[in-house]
Image (cartoon, rainbow, N blue to C red; front, side, top):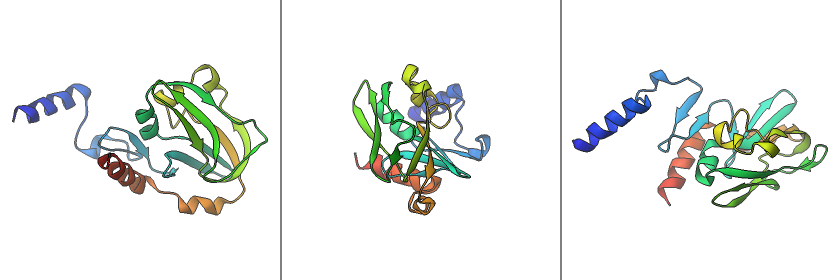
Length: 164
């Protein structure tokens, strides 16, 4: 009972509700309070893709940045190069570890987020907006079909966390 009261008062202090009616419909929360957005595709290696027209924006998920901790350095490819599905294109270094970043889909790099050079913490504070890593012109858009949607990725993360 005391634990339930503490959890309730903590949720109130953080303005967290167990009801999803207060959340944006494009946002859901996993047990670890990591956000997963509808409309994106997710790889099992914890990268996301937002496909709009002829451009796909790629970054690491909120779940990934949460596990990494404070990001202190980001290595990105040069524009004009190519990336291949499931292959590394860069790295993220945090106070805990350095992790390779894989591309969920193949294509030509048309832009990199140069803001991450000076402010790598954007990956922590805004993984789906300001913390995007690269934009590519997909060479095989059909590869998107093999990626997870928001519900599948949320379940994947919950199962992965439960096994650790």
